[in-house]
Structures are given as structure tokens and as C-alpha cells.
Image (cartoon, rainbow, N blue to C red; front, side, top):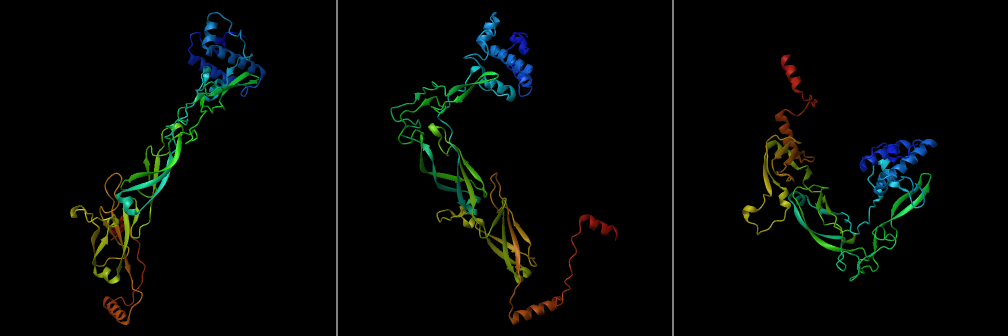
Length: 391
């Protein structure tokens, strides 16, 4: 078996680091004991791993290119070993700590969590917008230590266990040799430093919980369940990290008169039977009537709060009238419609005189003994055309 690491990996002598790594990954996937458990394949896998350790280490590669013995220091010997992340890279394509590079210590400053608060509004407030003062309990930066977590006049010190790296190497023996893995340092929790004298106000966290008041402007047109995002108004992160976002979730209370469907408003008006038969005029309150009115507002700037509609004679129960542009404003501009449904009330109690008049009316209209025949369903356009051709 050749001892040339270039031949073992099947690469040329001028191959770059990326080409060498790709060749190793390809062979490792083919020869790994989990894929091919026979002894011969295992030995070849060890040779491939040895060759890659030489060519992936700039110092060993340079020594071999100058004519040195690639395997004079041995593989799997005391103090030697290949990085476990290289094997994981071969199967999962990761870009981990290959070539001896480490991730390094992690920062104490991290982004804070997002916060969610519920805001109850009326239908008019959701439709036309509202400005509210909200009390929010969140984490804010500790002013005593300015988010550093250390007592005044002190600073973090380098961890003596990992020497500031935030990681420690753990070596395990296996049939492949010694496998070296990096784990976060338990002494400093991966920060690379420790706080010997924490801030008394925040206990070293760099933030404290407190209640504050925010002025929130809710735009016109929001609906039930809409979330308004306030960037950077959430909780401050540990170690004085940036704040998360605050989401205000809108909960619209039911309205006594109007229901909302998209940007349209729906309402139902009840009419006496006589008014529906003879026709009438109605004055409807609009949603604007729910808005606070100020006497200081100039007459020309006050919103219209009522609308007059004409009910035609003979209006049937269930008919609708659409009032354009008096619905809910859209978040993208424009405004929906107000849809008025007519409900005709039939009297349930009549005095003798009223009953006499209705019987007289029924006699005049020939409705004393109605047939009660079922109405034929409405025909389609094609059905009407067929009837026309058939005469």
C-alpha cells in the first residue's frame, strides 16, 4: 500500500485545501465502518484519515513536500489525533472547526426576547386608529453597571480553565485512534471570562425588570388579531444586548350595531310592515358616532355621524342597501362599504280595529285565501334562452 498521502486521497500535489477536503469527504463517506464494516475497508479508512491529517495541516504538508516522512509522528499516538468535526463534515457537509480552528468564546451580549401584549379596542378605535399609553413590564438595561454585569470599578477576568477560549478539548480513544472534540467550558459557560464581582443591582445579568409606559399609535384599519410591531421595544438582552421587538395584539370588542367583514360594515334595520309597504326615510347612525366629539373642533372638520337612506315602497325583508365608502378604512388606502339589511316586522298582536283594517286590505287585494304555491327556482340564462327558442 502506498504511503503517499496525495495518492491515498487521489489528488495532485498542487491541490488546494478545498480540493483535499472534498476528496477526503468523498472517501470517508465510502469507507466509513458504518457503511463498510469489513476489516480491509476499515484499514483503508484509517489510511485516508492519516493522509488527510497530514495534508490538512499546513505544517505537516510543508514538511512532507520538503521530503519528510509523512507518518513519522504517527497517527493515533500520544498527543495526536484528528478532529471529530472533519468526520462529521464528511457526512453532513458542515463547516465546523476543521483544520484546528475553534469557534472561540461566545459574547455575553445577546439579543433580548420579543414581548407580546394584548390591547382591547372598540370597533371605532380599530377602524379609525387610536393612540394609547400602555404599561409594559420588561427587562431594561441595568444603569448601575451599564449592562456589563460587573460591580462598579471592576471588569471580567480571563477564565483560568479555558484561558479565554470559551472551549475545552476532550480526547476520546476509539478504534479510529484518538478523537478530539471541543466543548463549551463549564467554568465560564463558554464566555471565556468570569465575573468575580457581579453587579448587585442585576446580579451580573446586565438588565433589570421594571415597568414602563409606552405611547402606542394604532393605525386605522387594524382588525381583530392584528399584531402591531414596535421594533426595539421588547426586552433588553443579557449583557446589555440589543432589545427584541414588542408586538401589540389587537382585540376588538363586539359592537352593538355593526359587524365587520373585511373592510365592510354590516347592520340590520327593522321596519314595520306598513313602512316597508309604503316606503319611508331612515336616519342611520354611522360608526363615526362612536368617536369622541369635541366642541373645539371646527364645524367643517367634524366627521359625519349619520346618514339618510330612502326605503322604497314595497321593500322586502332581507333586501340590502349598500352605502359606498362608509365602511372601515383600509390599511392600504380607501374605505369599505356599509351594507344595510332590511328586516320587515310582522305584527303578532292586533286589536280588533287593526285586524278589521287588515282583513279589509286583504279583501281589496284578493288575498283572503292565498294559494301558498311554492315559487319556481330562478332559471339560469341558458334556461331562459331555451324557453325563448321553444316558444
